[in-house]
Length: 388
Ligand SMILES: [Zn+2]
Ligand SMILES: [Zn+2]
Image 1 (tube, protein in one colour):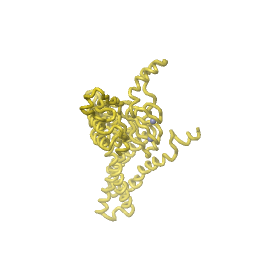
Image 2 (cartoon, protein in one colour):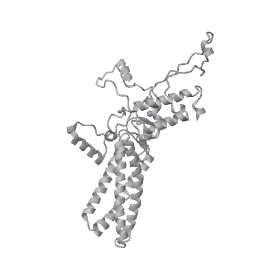
Image 3 (cartoon, helix red, strand yellow):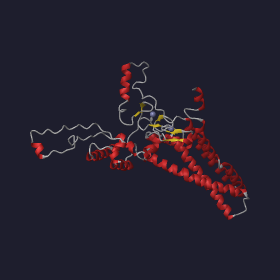
Image 4 (cartoon, helix red, strand yellow):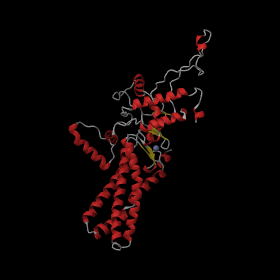
């Protein structure tokens, strides 16, 4: 057992780190060509030490920023779920009554769908998900990332992850820009830079261009997710909305066997309709929905953002910059600067509860009424499989 623990680290084995080593090497890969280009083009041909120093400063600052946030993503726990917070943490001795009371205070809706993890057999806080690869629950899980040493990206590492993507995108854009300007010079003044420099320049143009497209599209996607306060999982799984549906459960409008009574039956003193079965509380599950209901949920999901607090507040919440009173605005700007420079901060809050979009309740109620209304149209005995 101890051998096994030694071979892996937190459940990770050595081969989980191969993509990470690859990522580290990819970031380093343009540097030899960059040094050749900067010394022979900016320094010797253009004779501009200022340009040389500026490029070196920008490129190595961005590289440092990328590595600093990469280290945070690999080393920091993305979001341990742990036990639910106790009602009174100060008292050292806890009686059985206190313990039961604290569970009751904390487990307000753990019997709701998605609030209890059957794999960890533990409460699953809001926005937490069970990662099947890490085999654990992660607070506000975004996705499992093989490039980050086979770890999840969660509440505590998402700001660093985004910082990493944004800085590597900027690095790619900058490298491509420097290389394209050199390529333009080479086209205008052929043979001036020797034989090898153009090859380095071409390599940098290709690498810079490819990574600008790849990391840029990734950065654009995460900028959209941050602006709407969604995780990757929430954006890709519209049916997670079902967990938040209120339970309006309109009274059943039918008799048990789905028949409406004729006028004769209603008047007859000898006719006893079979009793109306009360409908059990129904929070629909994805597999129970008909095709039409699934489309309703997907369409609602395009507009319904559970945690959207507005553009500015979403970005501040994810980068861990709290709202400060008016006079402390400069402190807020310092925090923003720190977050932009070296990332590494945590998002706001404890990762267990999140302020909700004030419009979400009415949108959810509207969706629930549509779903339940559609369900009323369906024969009661039909199963989801017959609709599929
Ligand atoms: Zn779990
Ligand atoms: Zn994972």
